[in-house]
Length: 334
Image 1 (cartoon, rainbow, N blue to C red):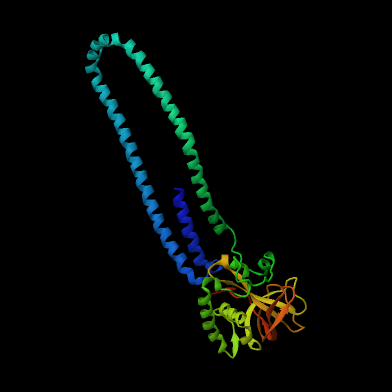
Image 2: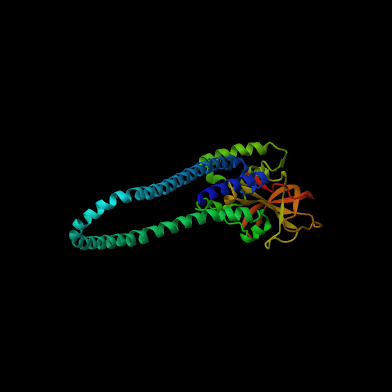
């Protein structure tokens, strides 16, 4: 029965994510078909499990009914035959009396031996094997129930500047030989890990052509990660160009003056491989912001050596900016 509840729980949880519009807070929406397929599959498994339990319960009730009917028939039969058998039993009683002592002694020995053997088997098999299996089963149920509890009862948290602070935002040296590609998911989107070296070079050049032809590079919700990756991969191509995009403000402890980072959280596949992407922005002297303020910025792109990161990074010198409300979907996807 527990398995039935677990299957129903996951089906309802995934369905709730779709109906509430929260699926995009967990995965790239282009993979939404996977959760839809999971809902269908879990629904089918729920039906099969329900039918299985129904059949088992019906068989158990049928056996119980047969046992009850058998006891009643046995009682009636004994009452009907008792008078007919009385004389026969009395006649044989004297004959059996001669053997009862020997049979009783032999039967007691056999019963005692059988009882001891059965008791030994019960202790050996029941205690040694059933309990570990039971604990493993309950542990498995607990592991499955935990995400259901958190999914239904904990609020959905949107990634913002507090997550950047919690991760201790920094800009490590880019090392192509590093074993952990997720370590590079700051500022610059990096999809090279999903291609071979030659394959990534080909894809990068194809994407460059899309943005190189633009007079002004407008990064929107659809092309943000792709365009930003092209800017980082081909800095000289975009130097001096006008670039505009939306994002949230992050000041941090390493940024001084009128410089702020403007970021977007982006998903490649899901929240597990999410990163915070954007660039350093130099605002006019009269501009003042708080972390998580949303802005639309337009400016000229240049490159600067940023000492706290010990890296050359893009810097957008703002020519126009305006405050905007937080988007309904604050994330961008690849």
